[in-house]
Image (cartoon, rainbow, N blue to C red; front, side, top):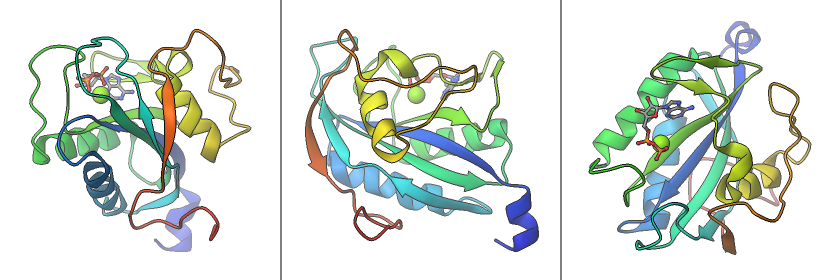
Length: 178
Ligand code: ADP
Ligand code: MG
C-alpha cells in the first residue's frame, strides 16, 4: 500500500468463527485470505478462544477470534470478499446458526452506521456475544463502538469463551512481537 492509499484507508474489525473440521487451520486460512485482499493489511489478530455455541447448543464448540484490518475497500465490497472466502472454504448454509467451517462477520467499519438488506454496521450482535467481546477487547481494549457504546465483558453474554486457545498461525504479527 502506498502512502497515498493509506490516507484513504479505514480501520475495520472482523469476527472469525469455526466449529467444523480443523478449526484452528480454518481460522488461519481465512486470515491469509483476508491479508490478500486488495490494498488491505492485517494489523492485529486476537488469540483463538474456545467458546460455547450461542444459539443451537447441540453442536461442537467454536474457535473464535477477531482481527483488525486497514483497508481501502468500501464496506459492501469488504462484505462481498468475506462471503467469498466462506464460499471458497466450503461453507454450507442449511439453517440459521448451523455448524460452519468458517463464519466471517464484519463487526465494525470505522465510524460507519448503516442498515441495508445485506449489511448492518456495526454488527448488531457484538455486545451480546462473549465470543466477540472477549477477543475484540484483547486487541482493542479501549474501543468505543460507533454510536458511543463502550465494550464490556459482563454476565449474561451468550456464547461464553471457555478458554484461551492461543495464537493463530497467520500472516500477522503475533502478540509479544507487536
Ligand atoms: P450469522 O453470522 O449471524 O450466523 P450468516 O453468516 O449466515 O449469519 O450471515 C447471513 C447474512 O448476514 C449475510 O449473507 C450478510 O448479507 C448478512 N449480514 C448483515 N450484516 C452483516 C455483517 N455486519 N457482517 C456479516 N454479514 C452480515
Ligand atoms: Mg456470518
